[in-house]
Image 1: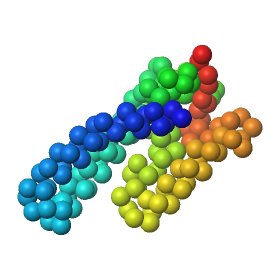
Image 2 (image 1 turned 135 degrees about the vertical axis):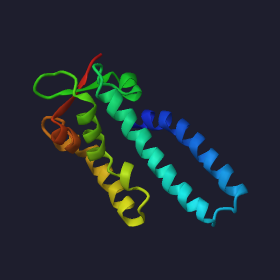
Image 3 (image 1 turned 135 degrees about the horizontal axis):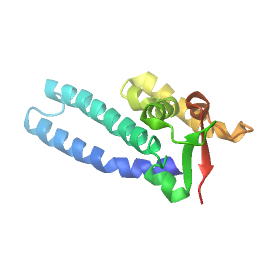
Image 4 (image 1 turned 45 degrees about the vertical axis):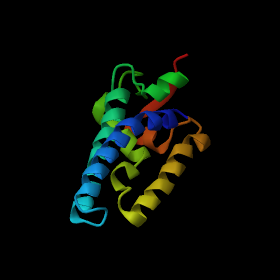
Length: 146
């Protein structure tokens, strides 16, 4: 549920980028011009930076929470110390959970990444410690704070 809230928040800057890209490509040759292809690549790169940055900075902070996690009263902590995980591990964690952040623009691979993300998101349900694949790789726990 937290990731859905975060997705809504991340939609705002993405919508602005898409609106700016489409307004510039429509006037400059339409959707089938070379400019549109470059715009799609640049949009994909911008979305990657926005997504990884958001999760790395917020989950890697001392608080260890994105806005969605704050709303649900959960936080990401180091499994052995209970401390903050830092932006590098938080970035790794989100990439293991959602490889589509980088791969969604590749037609078949993006679909496979999306299916994997669904399985990874559900993986805590069958783990006795309630750790997802992404938590095992990053050596983190998600705990309740309220």
